[in-house]
Length: 544
Image (tube, rainbow, N blue to C red; front, side, top):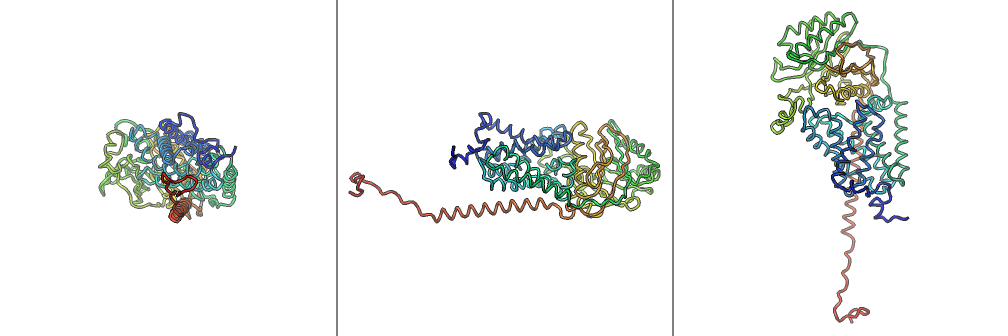
């Protein structure tokens, strides 16, 4: 049966046209389905960590959006799918922020509304091979813009970027060394678009297959030709101290005592550095010289510097800071890094005058933490250079990239996920360090108070075993060192710039098209009005 142009526009030539049944014809059912479809990628992240699912997880969402009857409905489907995605990836925040988690997910979900419109624009009905080919570039670019905008600290930061689901896949980590997590997200969305076209549009399967083949070829080329971290056999012995959950009155004092006891067990093991987790010291060391002296004594006993994290009101300036502080045999060395990027609501409340009510419905910060102003590379032991980050900051690719470019041999993240022990958050957080290591070609140590603690080599591969959330122990890791600069460390977020160029080219093309249509409408001759007939005129001989 031949299809008219109208039929093709309305999708009657595709397997999944607008006739989706009475339930999906209802806005409520359709909205709920969009939210559920958007939540599916959650299964790709730890703890389920079904990394392979990320290559098809967006397909149901894409198929639903492309069937939208109007562009406005497609934007709604994009928004509701984004809400589902944000809520699923951040579901572990519900016990802390309660209903405010839903508010944040709804606001951030709106970032996917333009992406939904683009999906329908390029894939609705029976798209031509040319439109499918364009979609393989435009839709991943649109997704990358969403990830870029929501990666701003004030909007929650880059937690749950689609590419980070590939943290334990060696070929994907090689790609991360070339284009960071951004390149992984771009390629994952492109694969999902191609699979959706293979499922729904028989007439355009050739460009979809070509896209899949091109992705596989690019991945293989990167595996073979991209530069690898230059390991020279040199290793650093770095110890992680994880005290575990400390409850009850006097928590900071009890935690310090347990960390002290666990650190003392490292004596005689020839470690180069001991790393404690975030908020491992709850007092300003200038106000508590007794604690500073105990740390110095520990350093002498173990034979290594200790990097602790002080979460306290400072004596030399107003406000509460979270600071990585290096302590040597003689006491604090003066090397200090103050956390720069704070967790929204957890460590400060954005626009507190307007949103301060969040403290009454959840566990939002009662007082804003103060921010540091610059990154710091510390020299420890026999010249080993380490770049510290604090908790949430390990989610930001640019922070670790700058530390690597500034000369850090090892990246460190001091973290605490003690409020989320029974959720997927500890595993998700620990997995991010694998990507940061692969992106920069530098090993990374992720040390926490209560688990999960983990160490990764310069290629992002695991070093030793994770310390789970039930562990209260210290562990020594032989961390391989590497030199050289990865393409990502050298060139930065080039996939983001490429996506901007693609979208810019699309906007220019649409602008030219609209201008031509406008000019064509103006230049076309106006249709002549039909000659008026009077009652005396003859139909056969007008005017008679």
